Image (cartoon, rainbow, N blue to C red; front, side, top):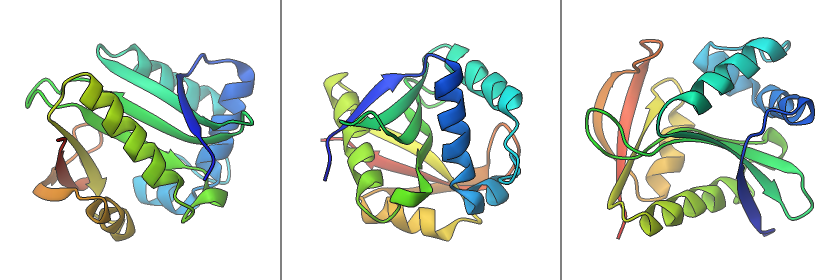
Length: 166
């Protein structure tokens, strides 16, 4: 499996085009989330959404690249949730052409190690209830369901999951 690297998004035209392609390569997620039409990802809206995310205190939008520089995924990470104090993965997306090849597992391991180095003892995320394959993925990595509630931004039903970081 190739080595992956995370780096903050810089919002260049090239990066934004790559990220739009990343979203378009995941049409089932786009439909389930209801945020973007996978057939026409609006570049200006995507940029605005990513800038808002990156501009939120304690949030990072990170691009995952392989050693050849190819974009393989995206991670939105919140260092400290204002209610529970845990770091949260807001989004972890792997390019659709690379699914089921271990990239998601590797990205998750990189994020978990990054948070361990920052002395965090646990991490959380919310999975859309209408994406049971995502819940199964996270469960296979040792995450456990701790709650069900709507997400804060869009009110979509979600499964809240937690993982202890040893």
